[in-house]
View 1 (cartoon, rainbow over the protein chains, first blue to last red):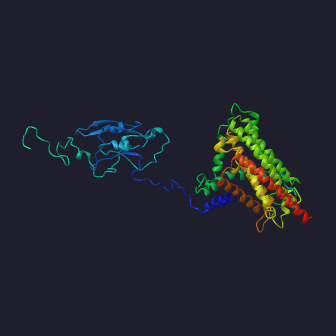
View 2: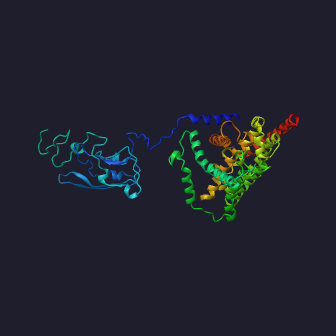
View 3: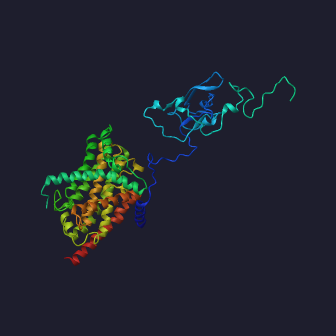
Length: 171
Length: 317
């Protein structure tokens, strides 16, 4: 019986305690930097698209929400002709980011992407591309890859030696 | 001492009682939130006050569905009974001098009768729903109300003995010198517990017991019929708080402030206590509930009556 009265009193004392609720839209929620939110496509430091259209993200995606079509420009650089993410399917698992060999696709700390129409949840390439490098500032895939593109022959990448001439015996 | 303007009193009390009852939905949610360190509804209108309006519109717009297996006429009339009986009780509540609809000389008995009739609403709702959980809730309500009705009446007899009247106005006047909470403290505690059980508020909400019976007697109800049960419950809370104020805390009496303000202050204090109990106390098992009523509360009420009677006979006769 006394425990009941004490319970009443203890609960009443909560009138003077601070409330734990965070008033969300006015007080923004803390989102950690590694939060897996809205997906973006990043660019190289020199402004070129990082995505090479390798389809690994689309294959890794467990809900098949990524669709893209690779193509090549005149210099031999591969890039996606279109790149489409259906965010009404996306589960923000981050497998695409893990699979990406060029750090192009990245997940960002943003989750406020509600829409009234489901169709608006489908993001096209121009919605996904950002004007920055995202989480990897200095990385430039085409500068470290041993692939030949216009303006960069084989052996001209960073930390790459010229290709061995197989017809010569000298080391 | 009936009001000089009977229609004004009737409509005034009707409108105020219904407004308080629906406003209680907001008050309860805010207070519960306060005691659970939350905010509660604070978005719709200033301080979330328009939440009540939004809820009402939502309830009115909902499909008013009657299950095909239900006993239709009884199913429809059950939620009306609870509103009618509680509102009838408000007819005898003296809010302030001159603000009363009917100054009955057996007002207290009328109140007890009406609160007993209220159980029909619950039992019929449980029965007509033709659903085992609803029926269980209805049966529980019947047993609970019967058990708690007994010592509810007995706990009030001490007040009647001291004031010598069943008339609520006379009872308030009899508390000029001292509020009945002091000579009748045990009676007050018993009445508070019985009142909680009568309104089926949280420590005694076994008829609806969400965790056991889905929603008990009103599982099958939707739309405004459910709203009637809801408002009926809050009207019951208001009624019991008003009765506690009148019977044990001197009704409208108090210094400085006008009588009606005193009455409302005291009433809202007890409404707050009811909500605090909901916020803090767990629900007992049903056998514990019955054991409490018959083995503890009833003997206490009888002893209280006996002692009060002896004292009145020895000193005031």
